Length: 184
Image 1 (spheres, one colour):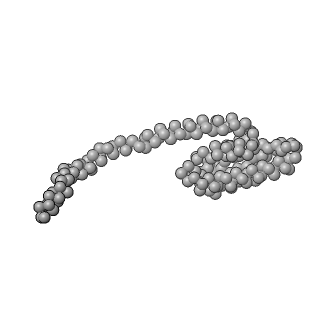
Image 2 (tube, one colour; image 1 turned 30 degrees about the vertical axis):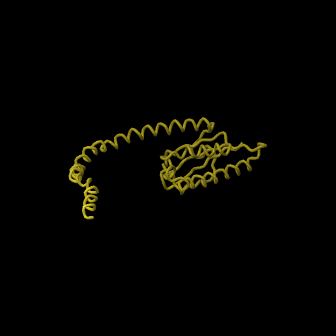
Image 3 (tube, one colour; image 1 turned 120 degrees about the vertical axis):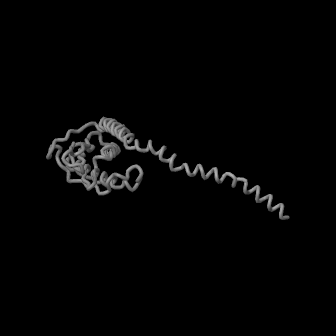
């Protein structure tokens, strides 16, 4: 079994957009059981990905490292294609993500491995919490729209007056019809 980590780097803010959930989902789809995905606290543009891979039959570290390298490359391709595949959902995911070389888990900061299914559940809770926070701040940001009703009432008042002025014109088709008949 080989355990390695690498950093995903971008010019954009990779930590704000739920990227870790996408990474964990990808790793689970690759049939990996253990790993970890962490925000790099020292650099908001980096995400740390750690994986454990065991080939069948186990024991060939070179083959296992090569498989982790392939998974890393596929992950980068996948993440960079998300924004263009569905801009409404993934438009904020950077398209310039690159991965560093593989490193040992303890180099330079120790990273522990978790069951990826457990990690995915924890990330769902985290995303739900972020969603609640966003909704609460949205309420504050939208508060000025409450005054919009009064502003619109004042601004649309002339239109109500215009409606009264134009009301007699609703009978115009009848009047024109009578005039046409009278001319015959």
